[in-house]
Length: 413
Image (tube, rainbow, N blue to C red; front, side, top):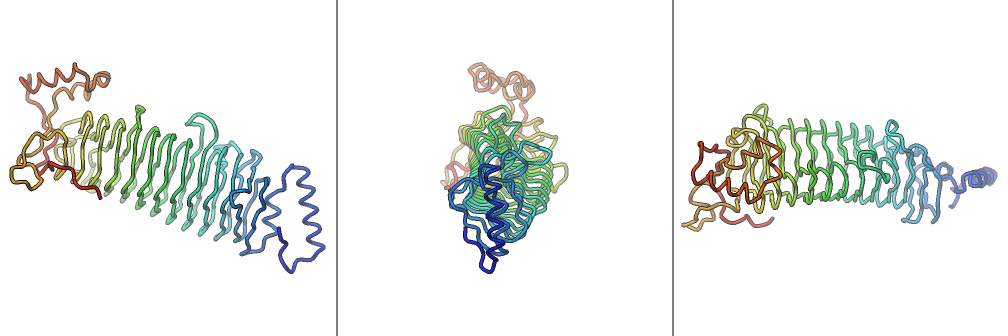
C-alpha cells in the first residue's frame, strides 16, 4: 500500500512497525491499521492476501479488493462495521464472523447513509449484510452464504432495520435464514436470487417497498408481507417450494398490496391471504401465472373483496381453496384463464361465452379435514368428486364466479 503524501517518514515507520508487530500476533495484517492510514475520500486498494478483522470504518473511504483480498473476522463480532456516510466496500471476500445473535454478528454491519456495498463474497458469517437506521445505501451483486448449520440457526443474509430508500439489487443468497425487511419503508429490491433458505423475503411493518424481478427457489417459504401497506411485487419468480409451509406469497393485514406478472411454479400453495378486515385491505392480482401448484390460492376468513384479473391458472391440483365459501366468492374475479374451463367462445373474442364457476365438491373433505390432504388428486377423491357432481347429496357451495374467463392465456409480457 502507498502511504498518503504529506505524512512524515517517522510516522510511516511507526505505523509499519505496528503492522509488523500485529501481523506477528495475528498471523495476518490487520485491516484496521490500513483503514487508519487511508485519508478521508481516499481509496484503499488491498493487495491480494488475507487480512484480519474486525475493523470499523469511521470516515468516508473506498476499500477495493478486486476479489483477491480476504478479510477474516477471527470469529469475533462483525467483521466490518461501517459508521461513516459515503463509504464503499467493493470486491472483498469476507468470512468468519462471530456467532452471537444478540449482537447480530455480521460480515458487514452498516449504520450509515449513502454507502455502496458491491461485488463482495460473504461466507461463514452469521448475518450477511445488515442495515440499521441507514438510508439511501446500495447493496449490489454480493454473494452471501451464512454459517453451516440448521436453517433456523443461521442469520439473515440481508437485514434492514429502520432503514429506508435503499437499493438491494443483483445479490445471490444461498443457505441463509431469511431476507428480513423490518420497519423499513420505501426500499427497492430487485434482481436478487434466494435459494435453499427459510423465508425468501419477509416484510414486517414495512410499507411502500417495490419488489421486482427476484427469484426464490427451493426455500421453505417465499414472500411474506405482514402489516405492510402498499407493497408491489412485480415480475418475480417463485418455484419449487415443496415443504409443508411452501407458500410462494403470504399476505396478512396489509392494505393495497399489488401482485403483478409474477410466476408461481410448483409450490405447495401459490398465495395465502386473509379476507380483508376492512375495505382498504385489498389485494390486487393481475397478470400472474399460477402453474403446477398443489393449491394456487388459499383464502381464509369470512368474506372476500380482493381484485383478481387477467391471471393464468394451469396445471394446479386445486385452483382455489377456502376456509369458508364466502372468503372467495365476493372477490372481483374477471378475465382470468382457467385450464379446466368447459365453455365455448363462439364469437372468437377470446372470452368464454359462459362464466367460469367453481363449486366445492370433494374439495370440502380435505379443506375441512386436514388429514385427508394426503389423498388430494388420488383416484379415491376423483371418484368422490365425480359422484358429487353426478348426484350431489347436498347443494354444492359456489366459491367463485369469473364472468369473463379467457379461453386462451394472455400473451406473456
